[in-house]
Amino acid sequence: MQFFGGTEISPSPPVPTASGNNAHMMYVFNRNGVCLLYREWNRPLKTLSPQQDHKLMFGLLFSLKSLTAKMDPTSVDKGNLGVPQLPGQGCSFHSFRTNTYKLSFMESPSGIKIILVTHPRTGDLRDSLKYIYNLYVEYVVKNPLYSPGTLIRSELFNKTVDQYVRGLG
Amino acid sequence: MAPAAPKSGDVIFASVDRVNAELFTLTYGAIVRQLITDLEEVEEVNKQLDQMGYNIGVRLVDEFLAKSNVSRCVDFRETAEVIAKVGFKMFLGVTASVTNWDAEGTTCSLILEDNPLVDFVELPDTCQGLHYCNILSGVVRGALEMVSMKTEVTWLRDMLRGDDIFELQVKLLKQVPEEYPYKDDE
Image 1 (cartoon, one colour):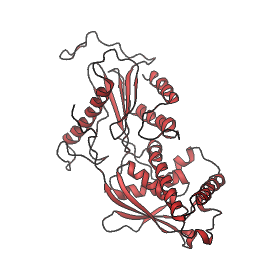
Image 2 (cartoon, each protein chain N blue to C red):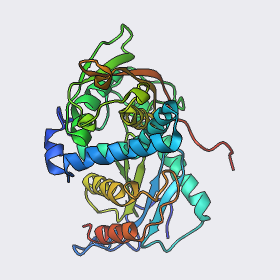
Image 3 (cartoon, rainbow over the protein chains, first blue to last red):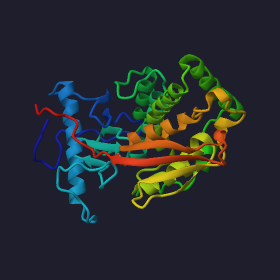
Image 4 (tube, chains in turn cyan, blue):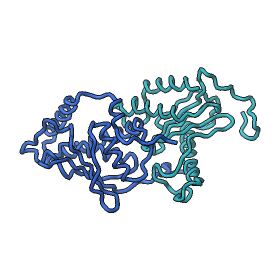
């Protein structure tokens, strides 16, 4: 495991296989920073408690979003860094890549954030995230026994997401 | 770039599963009927319908966003147009029009000439104060609240009360900025 330096990763992670299995983990947050769902498929190294981990991830996204909006060279109208923005205001990012993983991010105007961490060489996952959002609508939001804002405990949703993510190239 | 938001809900309406319109209308009627029996006061029924609509709205908005490909609206004017043209068509099968904007662009009216909820309905003398379609105002309020717009939604005209159209006034109270939700820094 290597944290800094080195353009090449050693040992380099396996090249993504056509058969999938490239996803490490997935988070779903709502606007209030509640982690509605956390799925993990391949994560050998854990250094934080789940609560700290979720909080850190949400904080990272929040700060990064505010930073990307601040750096936007095309927009005249931008507030100071850290000043709260209206939802939908400013630009946002959809993924970033390190030498060991790629993080893809989607946020709906209703504040649902879906984060998928995958192998660094996976392609554009924006449509996949949108598809997962659709799954969330079908299996979670439409379930009358689910109360919005609470943790998602749906076997069916988990199973469908697992199956879908396993097939990602 | 994000795909352009649809100008109407026709395509989505055609692609989603639908139920028989009469079943829908009569089911809604049965709910209102039961509420009147349970709550007795017409005012209470209005409140309850609004609350039920709100609860629907906070969920409905996600389905709307997921299926309509609407990513963001630049201002409240566009929001109102999208609700009227795409939202109403998608979920109710009818299209509303937007009029009566005030000078600040924060208040407008959604006009419904056709409303599937009120087929077969006539208000009896005992229920004159009833806003039969109050569930719709709740839905709009709930859905907008989830995209950070606090609104006040009221019925100005109601065909069941002898008006020629349904007029739903939507007033934008404030837009809530996104804030970092955790208070403590540990």
